[in-house]
Image (cartoon, rainbow, N blue to C red):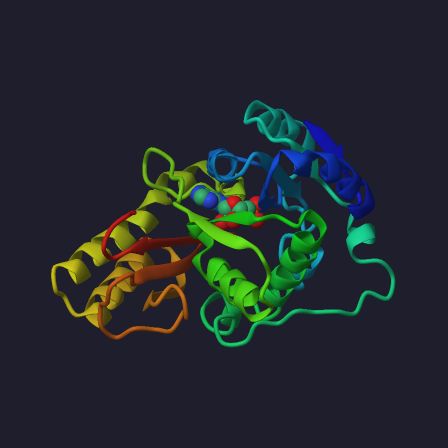
Length: 280
Ligand code: AMP
């Protein structure tokens, strides 16, 4: 496994590797867990060359968010990625990706604006900008993203389409702990007591999805889930039935619809979503 820390070095490393075929790419912020590794395994099935980036992207964090204390475990991440047969790790420095005077921002309207976008106003512009930069650097044929971040997938899909980027978006399923909690680097922030309560989040979403699937009015199922989570001490930022491509709110179930939610448990924000028709 090779490592590059700037775009020029990455291009130098990738040039000979491209002779063996297409590149598949997994962007991450590190602090890797089994969810990330499931994406790497998926990427390896997509193309003969696998590139994983590790970059805690400062411009997608708002003021007062956890950029400084975001978990970092670079050496452990490298071991995990080597164990999965990753070909190249790209871990750029922030000053290389965003040198003095950097002024370009990609903002994807519509899909970015609701839900996460309403709670974290500049977040998706930060995501779209770094993903575009990373795509230019890696030039992948395919890029694997986790459905865990459903709206992020919608934003990237829209950007790829609008800018006609020659990248195939692969959306991989959510990797969960045995008790149902969606894996996340931020789960490390949960206290023991919060961790014990956290699975109630996915359970509430699964219950509401089951009711909607059985014909219950989505508005009522959502309201019951919000109430149950509130009574269990979760602060609900949003819990909505959406079209996962447009991220528009749905008042009625339709094929492909998802229940998407963000909650606060103590100081930790948790994101999750379930497909009404069940996991693929
Ligand atoms: P992050 O390091 O949090 O930026 O995530 C990097 C990629 O891993 C994103 O595409 C995430 O959606 C994906 N990811 C994070 N957690 C999970 C999970 N539990 N299951 C599947 N994919 C995940």
